[in-house]
Length: 401
Image (tube, rainbow, N blue to C red; front, side):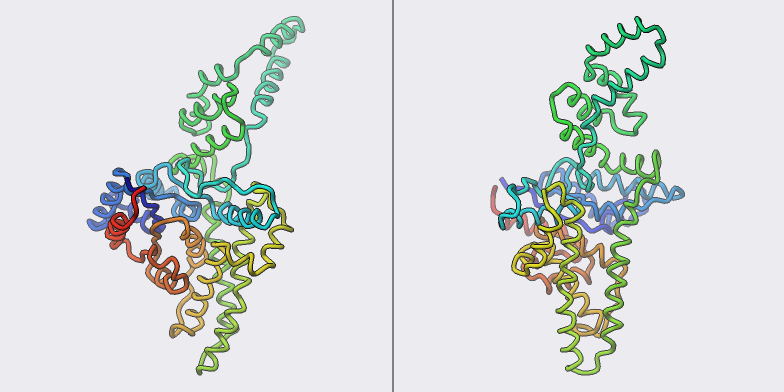
């Protein structure tokens, strides 16, 4: 029996499949969607969702609501429950593993990069740890305000101490689900077993977040019911803008290349920027550091040690990809190329390369990655049309489980 291939789709793939589901796609993309969905249903492949994908995909305009809703549906049909950690957690996981190898932290993180709980969102905090106490306090407050007779209130409070909150919440689950916008099964799978003492509050919080992270539920809660909430849609755009401005400044500093000597000097200059490119991974790791016992001092010590930094896949990918991209835009390896507004997001998508069997990106970025990161060449696919054949070839060549 062969294990399913892990296939990382490009944001534009899922966007086009959303068009297919709202009747706006062409015949080619409809065939591709049907082919990939059939592969997924057959158990040949899994398509994980990630935070960079969701950030780029779920841009929302109430006047074009169906566009976002159908994109979310495309994600649900192709990706299902499968997800990979947010880029901040991914970088922190890699950093924690390296820190453990170096004896800087006592425990290595036991986290699978591919999960079946939809946890692409970065926050995994224990939000339900005080739920019992909060519910009890709310009930006592209600008694205090509604029962003025002290004798009756004391009797009611004695009865309150015997309440089985798990049983009570189970009956109220549909109403709670409707009010907060969650599927009833998400409430039944998280809050109810926690209040019964069957799972920890951390596990209950994880299950609740898994329910919220379902794309259609997330659109409803994040953009419509409560929203707009937070800065998710702007997060990856801000990252790309920052990287684009930095690269533009580098290009302006290099100036026109008129000779072989100019190109050699430009190549040397760009190579000296690799620590700055690598630092993207370290700064992302800081955002999820607490979950993995990482302090700023530990991260700084690893970042300062080139030998320790290089084995970190995300740091290596950031350095190699941005060095190659910069050499393109300044004209060393090409006649000079434009700086694409999506470059920051493209690099974050590339962080998942070590953990998938096939990875989709646009033609320019994919071709560049294949040259900059030859160890991943065979898993990079620069054309959606070629993806079914690439999947078939991988399935034929992959060993049995």
